[in-house]
Length: 253
Image (cartoon, rainbow, N blue to C red; front, side):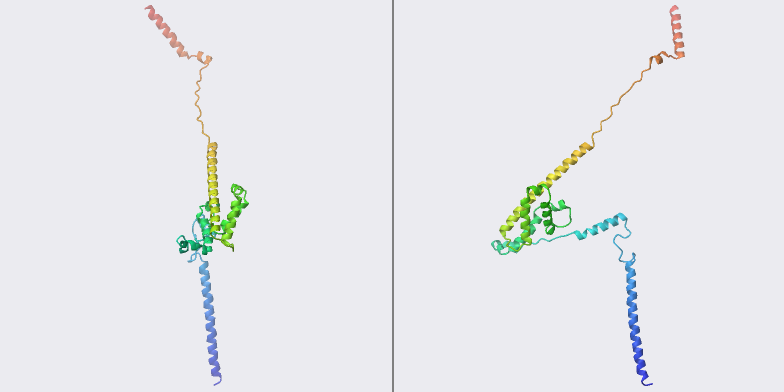
């Protein structure tokens, strides 16, 4: 009896421990299931965006949310009020500043890249280089007349961003000159294209909607025929004969 009592006490402790463990596991399992069903429920706090909205509005919301991942923005690398730019002649010691200025110059060039590509992404980085490559490989008027300028600008951009050589003031000024020249060409080309489109639309409006001429009004008068004019009513003839007889009688008196 004395030996069985300690064993029974250990068994009770083990049963309580295992029971507590099973209770905790069941509690965790039930709680996870409840949370899962609550998240699946549309009436819960995790309702999808545009729930109970009209179909058109829901499609517009999904379309705009899908465009968020395409938005890219690159901040300005070098501020105009940077203290390193105020050092004057000592700026040549910081060659990386010219690299930063070369990338910021794209933003300040005034090239209407957003209007040309209609993309929400910024053109300071890889997209600008891809645009230059497409411009060089295309058959546009800019490529045919300014192919050397595009090649020089691509070389300067690659040297400023990815090159391992020296990119100092001379290289930056050459790159800036090429960028300004390309900006002038693109602006002139875009303005000419928009002007031609305006003229084409105006000509289309003139040819597509001619002036409607007002139809002339023709009045037709139908004259009675000879047979119809000879046909007189009978009472008219009787009245005429009565009038003649009256005139004859009056003249005799």
